[in-house]
Length: 261
Image 1 (cartoon, rainbow, N blue to C red):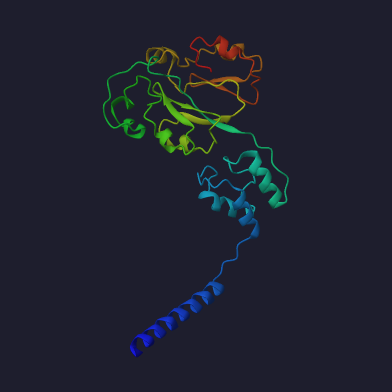
Image 2: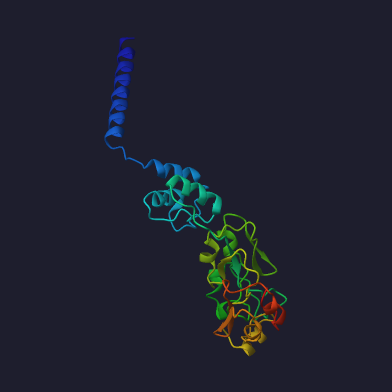
């Protein structure tokens, strides 16, 4: 009986010593955290998507508290979160233009030609290494195997008829799909953009027409008819300046290949 009591006392003493030691160590080695950093972290949505360029929301909160990042750096939170953080930091809220991802390809299964039937691993990066860069005749077109879909944490992008399609209402512009696409077909564009070029081919017109029924052929008809001079043709591909575009729709109407949507 005496042995049991002694053992219990020893265990209790050891536990008490360890508790006191850990408590003193916590005080001694405590890292002071800026109160603003904690408040900013609470205001952030907590998705930890990395779209801000930092290692999760805690990394962004620390950067904002130190003045190393903008209060509107979180693409998921948008203007509402930016306003809350600006109030915490005691600065004016920045005007934040909402962005959304856009896939620069309209080459659905019925619009594009194929060089062969591919039956291998359904992964866009892997397919890029097979002969011709994939079964589709257009070397710039969407593979449609969903690397972007798997990268999206917000269920905002899906494969529809062989091409990735973004739900702009669900998209938070975190940029993960942009990084995931091996063909660099996805870009972030203004949410308010009225017209976009759904093609990324830099081939000459005759080559494009053999590969895809709806690819941009660089004919310059859209550029010549744009009343606001918002379109340029570079490498046989039309590019729209969203700051100049008024959304009149003439380019979409005049495009002979319907590459502008």
